[in-house]
Image (cartoon, rainbow, N blue to C red; front, side, top):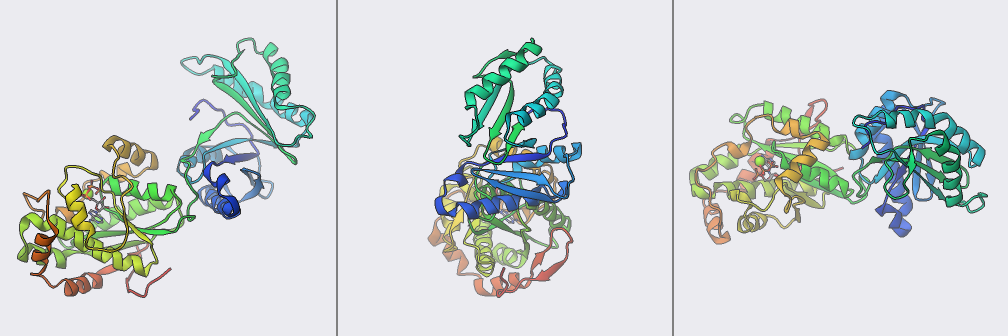
Length: 423
Ligand code: ATP
Ligand code: MG
């Protein structure tokens, strides 16, 4: 990220993407989904015109509202790291594909960018390079000739800069296409991956912790649409738990089209488990219930998999043996994108996507209600099933489902879930 970049009167931005360029016949659909994601994430900038160029998407403010103002640029720099499918975006100047037009825009913008570059504290190594790309072979100069031309005309006037083609700190990029050329000085990195909505729908078990929101984001990066389900234990958990979860869901929805939040009161099942099952097994039994309910909701939503923030570790519910026993409660696929993450990697992502501050707010969730002092770290399915003989699973599922709602995380309005609910 280049914090020193000035706000110039840019008239467009150019989006680069990796994987979706390789998707053969599906490419057009992927590009449209990416353009859709870009327009949604960048909507506060105002309506944007989309230009599809081979391997690139260019966006331009509609209605003659150009150039991009400083607030638009700030929003771009803030949002791009979260737009699934984007490898990088450059704000810049869209001009005619002629040397004269490219020269004119560089003449007008280079001094301000160079000045801001050199004014950094501490001073940077003042190494300069131009990277030119030319897809229109009819352009009278090849890339190297363009680069040499500008090095010859610019460098004598800026003796502080020296040419360093490999490790330049200050890079001018020029893309020359058949119908247009694009000049830029800055690349804002995106998360890569696939555009939102290109890989199907999943239902994520979202808790008030740090991990599960990151698990949701990882799935979005791979192009999944994510709905959320959370379990509370009212009145043992406070209403603030739902408010907190709405906040997390709202933040996650910055990265996709509206995901729904399903809230379930797990208390009936928890009370029965507390009263009729071995206390060391509670955590695993609660989790098996969560998966059963989540699977019912997922089927109603046409979701193809469940997602959790599990990570192989010492926590009772997350040992390999317990995960296997929990998993056996459903025949739906359960995806665990954080399985092998270090905690630091997870918190870094949580910070970057803006969920960390929301997650660390201390509100009890249903896991903390009636949690055993000595949770078993290695349970056996047969023993767990013995415990489950003591409770009426179907009746408890029905009771929990009666206290299941679909909440709009923005307006907090809610309606009861029913199994014929769908998209
Ligand atoms: P997190 O930070 O996501 O809560 P964690 O490391 O605290 O994860 P656990 O509390 O053991 O781990 O939960 C493991 C996973 O189970 C969570 O990531 C989440 O997907 C799911 N989960 C746990 N509690 C709840 C809950 N109350 N509602 C919904 N999902 C839950
Ligand atoms: Mg947790």
